[in-house]
Amino acid sequence: MKSPKKIGRQPSRLSADMPVEASSLIENLSPNMLYLNSAVAAFDTLRSEGLPLTVGHAPHAKNVLLLNIMPLKCVTEEDLCRMLAASGIDINLTLIKIPGQTYKTTSQEYVDTHYVDFDENMMQRFTDGLIITGAPLENMDFEAVNYWPQLCALMEWSKTHSTSTLNICWAAQAALYYHYGVRKHPLADKMFGIFPQTVFLSRHPLMQDLGNTFPMPHSRHTEVRSSELPKDVAILAGGGKTGLGLLADDERRQVFAVGHLEYEPFTLDKEYRRDLSKGLPILPPENYYINNLPDHGVNFSWREAALTFYRNWAKSL
Image (cartoon, rainbow, N blue to C red; front, side, top):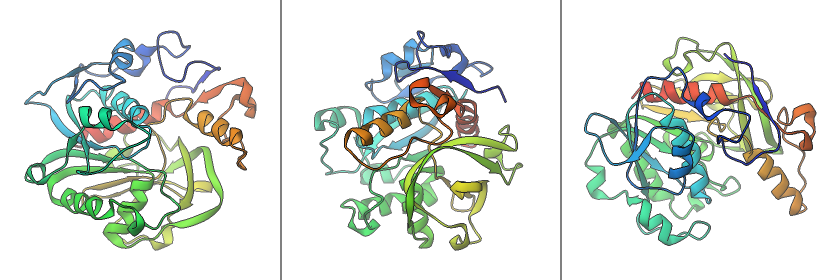
């Protein structure tokens, strides 16, 4: 694994004017293409980084659905499209939404333009992969989420109609609750920063080339406890302060990422400064800033681990 890249205060996305060269995102990867169902906001940015993506559909490519339930949808689209475009695998990516949902933080017009309804028609089809993102809903009971029944239907569908479903952060907790009844628990303090994850099952395909440990961003107020997991769920990586990191149930075709490997370098910095501006009690993210000083820049230590994990996931489809 390459040495971590240290980068100072720069624009919050990888581009040619940053110390981290854009070409490093796709070095040593075989030629591939990410085919998008629509030209999302990040399309030109990602193309300018040298990443291979276009609008269209290729019959030979793997089909992946993305249910993006984050408020700032364009940011999450960019993060995940970057990972998939750098995977070395040809992928058709379709952005999906729950029928009837309305949106405020991202305009309804934007969502209606770029996302397609996950409807009865789509439920008749099989997909190679499904990604369900996190959402800022940690302090709510799952049943209180207004689209919980529709999300449950999607999670049930995924067990038989998706080769692999990647559940991220809140979605990982929601999926563990839906599939096994595992509850989330509030933390005394926010888990916030970059934390080492020990690889426990190095022979698992998703752990290939990740070494013995790798760094992963975490940003959450709740946790799921290893002592409450069913035997069907394997702990792939975790340990230390964060507890769980990456989990998998191969029989149900589910992957659970408790953290956020997909995050671009400055996401945690934005969260920290946002909470400071609101007067909220927040400490700087751990193991994140150079010399632990916010004005010294960010240590993008998880970049290689993120690219490796998403490449492994794409290869598993």
